[in-house]
Structures are given as structure tokens and as C-alpha cells.
Image (cartoon, rainbow, N blue to C red; front, side):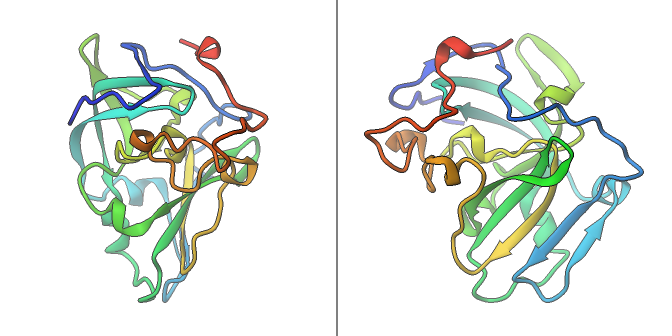
Length: 213
């Protein structure tokens, strides 16, 4: 945990809430997690099956494209690499998209990431959290309950899909929801890679004055 503030960011002790669409209302009976794409055989997991996977706790830094950064949040979750152990990716699968609910569509939201950057302890599908002012608690529906992806701190937080529903393995990098709307494919906050065109601000961008508690 570096606690290094990227350029253009402002540190906050809050965990602001920003999301696209309605807040997903979890229904365990209909919820599933799908692994598909450039793998030998697709796999669909129930919530109970996902929650039997190995877990760890990790304290991380989060950097949002809307210019806030939050240090010292501890999450409990399932490492990304545990899902890879369940399937056999094709040898040329180098990228993934993590999907999540957008309104009523379980695959309405997605964010692209390079596969090899997600194999450490700092790539987690999380379900509970704590910080210096909050004891352990489940993440709220607004933060992505029952399961939300938290990426390494070398990616802006829009890569951290809420209300996750699956992982697509890809042989070529393909844009996700915000990337198709003008946001950076690589999204490194320390290089301030906010937008695909650094000289323009895509529609739908939230500024710091629009943070929500």
C-alpha cells in the first residue's frame, strides 16, 4: 500500500458513491457468475459456490477518475486468480472484461483490463470492508453488494465493476462501458490516463463537486 497521491487527485476519508444506472437489488436465486470467452469450457457459478472460494484481506488505495483518492481501506474478498483456477484460458487470452449489472441487464456494464496485471493480492472481488472510521461490515448495495471488483491501484476505480456478474476472457483488448464513451483503455492514475483523448472530457464525466456520501 503506497499511499501515493496520483496527479490531479484529492485525498478523502469518505468512500464516495458514483455509479451508472439503478442500484442492483441482490436476488440469490437468480444471481450467477459466468466465466466465458477464450476459455476451453464456459462455467456458471451460484453465489454459494463463489463464496466457497479462498479469500483474503487486503488494505488498498483507491483512485477515482472523478479526482478523489481514498487510502487505507481494508477489504475481504476472493482474489481474481482463484477464478482462473476453475477454468482453462486459451494460451492467447491476454485481456478480460469484468461484467456487472446495469439496470436490469446483468451484462450491461463492463470494464476491460490486462489479465497479467490481476494475478496478485490486490485484485479482489470484495464483499465486506473496514477503515479507520468503520468496523467490518458488508459493502452496501450502492457500493456493489453482493460482490464488487476492486482493481490494483494502478487503475482508476471505474475498472472496479460493481454488482459483478462474470468475466470474459479475450485474445484482444476490447473496450468496456466507459471506454466506449471516451475513457482511457489503460486508465493508469499515476500517468493521469483519464480519457482516450487527453484534450477532451467525455459526456457523463462526474467532477469533484458531484461526489456523494
